[in-house]
Structure formats: C-alpha cells, structure tokens
Length: 282
Image (cartoon, rainbow, N blue to C red):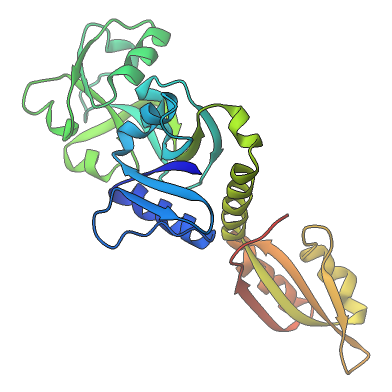
C-alpha cells in the first residue's frame, strides 16, 4: 500500500485534497484525522505539516508527498520532484524597507530574517554575500520594524503583505515555487500505482487549462473555423440535418476562449458553446 503525505492545513492542504478528490481518491477528513485510508485505490494519506513532508519522504518513511518546492528545497531532504501541480505559486525574494536604497549587492554584512534559512544560505553563497541569517518561524515582515533585521528573505505571492509592512522586493526571485509531488526517488514513478496517480493528476491539471468549444458553421467556412480551433490533433466535425452546415467540437486554451468565440462569430459560426473539462488524457 502506498503512503502519501498531504499538508495538514492552509491553502496547500485545501488545494491538494481538492485535486486528489477530483482525481478519484478519497482523502477528505471528517475531523482532524492524521491518516485517511483509501482502500479502493490502495493508498494511505497522512496529514503532516508542509515543512515536514520532504523529511519523511526523504527518510523513506513515506513514498510520496505534496509540498511546496520552497519547503522541499529548504528541508535539504534527498527527494525527487516528480511533477509540478500548478497551484500555490510564489517567489522566494529579498525585501527591504521602501525607499531605503538597499539593493541585493548592498546586503553584504546585513542581517536578513527568514523562515527558510537553508534555502537562503544556499542563495547567499551563490551570490557571494556574507550575511547574518536571523531565523524566524513566522511574521518575518515585522522583523525590520522591530530592529531584528535589516532585510528579509521570504515567500511572496501577490506582495500585498509586504506593501502593508512598508517593504518592497529587490532583485530577481531566488526561487519560483509551487506545489509539487515528490517521491523518495525518480524510480518510484515506475511503480504502477504511482504511474496511475500521476496520470490522473496530470489529467485534472491539463483539463483545468483547457475548455471545450462547440459550434455550428457553414461548410464553406469550415477551413477558416478549423484554423481558429485546430484542437489537439484535429477538431471533431459532424454533419447536421442541413447539409450546408456542420457541427464542430474542439479543445481550446481556457485563457483564449473569449477571443476564439469572437473570431468564430465573425466568420459566421452560430450556437457557440464553451464548457468545462473535468479531466483529460492527451
């Protein structure tokens, strides 16, 4: 039986449980259970602190886990990233008081507060900076105001929290992070059950990037319509009762469907409908 770790709280936990549920796995908790067993799929889901997941997987206690790339990197655990999951996106960046004039090259000798000491240490070495790392477990952005640090290194999503604290990001991100599926090694991805899990997850993720568009079009305009909606291999074309018209079905990128509907309507397509795709295998 596979053993897989899931974050026990927060946005990562909610998104991971939702993704796995859509992929056909039973991992929802009724209360605060630490383990949920999905007997049908022969897998145990263990709920752990996101920061600890890579350590358990790296030590071979668990087979798989979902955590943030930033947390995995900071843990120092020897694990393999099996696939990105396209949620929980963030950036690991330096931030300083607004209008302070500080830049990354001016941080040498400064105190930098962070909740990711190992990740920061590796980046400081790469940048050739000698800084004092102040380790904090949370609320890093207040450390400068309280006189504990001169700058911070933290995970940034929208940047709203930093702006509220009077801080601004400097330099390029040290790491682009998101939720990832990790394993003890790349070899575990050859296991039949892990292959099935990854295929299901990939199907849900890909489906979230696409939508299905259906429309009627004159045969004389079919070539132009297919150029707008080429689909993955080719669109599906079906005859209608009126021999001059055909029905077309095609997958399109979700972010482009409004533009596609506009272009189809301009060349005479009618009855244009866009629907969600729950899962896919491409």
